[in-house]
Length: 111
Length: 113
Image (cartoon, rainbow over all chains, first blue to last red; front, side, top):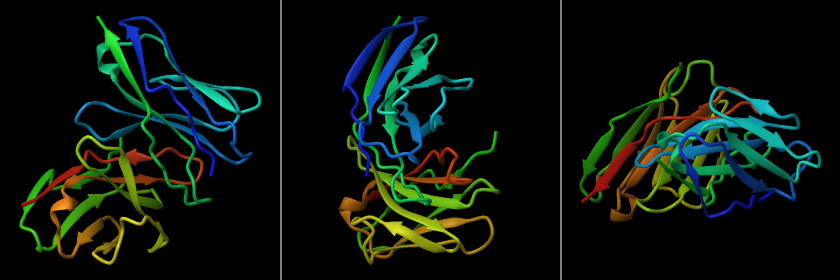
């Protein structure tokens, strides 16, 4: 099963862009790249996911390297509400696809 | 926006008692999951459910745990005889298909005393 590597923590200033990196060098051709976040005292929240092409939604953008061995979650303008733990996950288990959470990156946002 | 609904939000139970945690997944979703998170620890996978049967379960999901989809809308997690170490947040999740994201509920805080 493909594993991911993320920095333990990152800091950002409010209203500035944030780039959260993720390495997944053992990714297979059919593995989707998912990002979730967990705000303090809340459940995991879907952020974005993609397979090969870069993806944009109202929350964030996902930039996927051409060789797919890394990806970057981009928050275009960080707000205090974006302070959370961000998880980069490649679902395992074939078509059923279970999320196995690691430690993620704890993002702090300074006013 | 469609939501995964979990009830109750908080349940306190005595050790050895049975508890049932309830979830209503999003209506057109086909894959269902239970996760738990002990305070201060990682989110842990418990079980996945598809086509009315368990697809995969973790080592945590032993004989004390069971899941059921009793009708077209509810998805339940039963713990037969609760232990102190079962105290945790339990999250239900669902998704439509293989290429889709997972939607999580807001969780049930289970406290075993």
